[in-house]
Length: 444
Image (cartoon, rainbow, N blue to C red; front, side, top):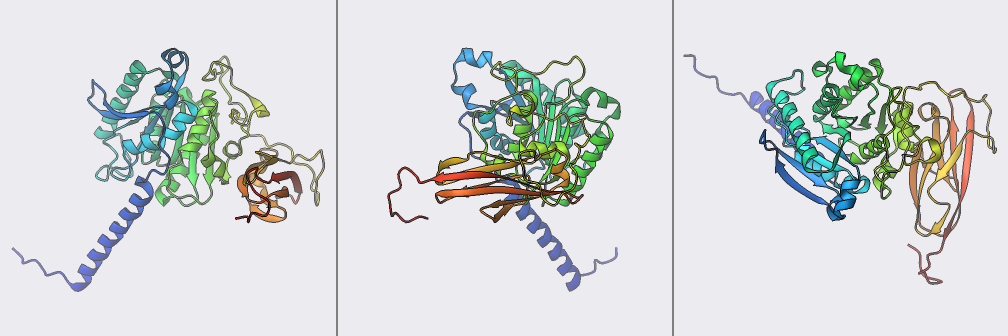
């Protein structure tokens, strides 16, 4: 037997450097991925076991479900969110259930997070096949969903497949394979591969609402595969498809956008506004995705003869632009609205541009949540500049600003289009002195 050569200083240095790089990567992923910054909800979360497969899962029941009376609980529809975790140990099922709690309370969602075995640091990644662990996860997920239907008042007609990170492999797959179970898809900074999907089953889910959420500073592999997912859904002619990339964020948890998208598909009205959602600013996306983040999506397109879902409280959902809260885009209508002839500047009552703001009068400190109302193709092609009393405060389609001091303010937006046309719109805002403030009291 040939004697083993002693390690050289150079080889030892390379080994240490590789280990150090891996350790640094693990620290970065754990510090950004495992942390769940979303506040806890007021409902009930528990770990359960599906009786036939003996697979564990986390169930969260929203506060109205837990604390409401039995008759109201049984009379109301409770849309179901199925959230697939990413690679263990960086993401786990319990973390998915925790991050959805606040959104579940806001919209009245029942949330389940199945424990999966295919996605771990020792599993196949990137996923390229329907391996045994993957297929076993599929089997147990279907059993868990059915178990929740039998033991809760979850709505069988409104079921979201959602994910974060490598959980996207399963989220895309479940909509593709089981469109009769899952009615909507919203993936967040997630992985994708077409190798596990069946093109022959596309027709059954072509009208299902689909959202792909990306962020400006996501991991390269997630960004690459998210782009592949966009191309796959567009090439397969999905009728209610949206994608959007959010400014500044990295590989972070963003259930608020997915929750809002699902609410629009299910016809659910939130019980409160989402501060996190108001802070999201898009840097690119298709017209539908940009309209989603601006709160101006049109109703979804449905197959001829398909019924429109009723709202959770029994009333029909709002449609069109009459309600920013509850409209979903007709995504197949990709035609661009006609752009007015180029002018140096246009500011009149007939301008296609207007400013929408949360409040024009309020007490200090006043939070202004604003967005531009304009033709939908401008979201993609236009360059936006927002000012407050001539101070630049943003460059997105929407945004927010807290005004600390009383006084009169002018909130304005300027949109420059590629053809040279420029449009401006403005709103006057008045901030009143707080009732409790004393004359001469120093301001912060």
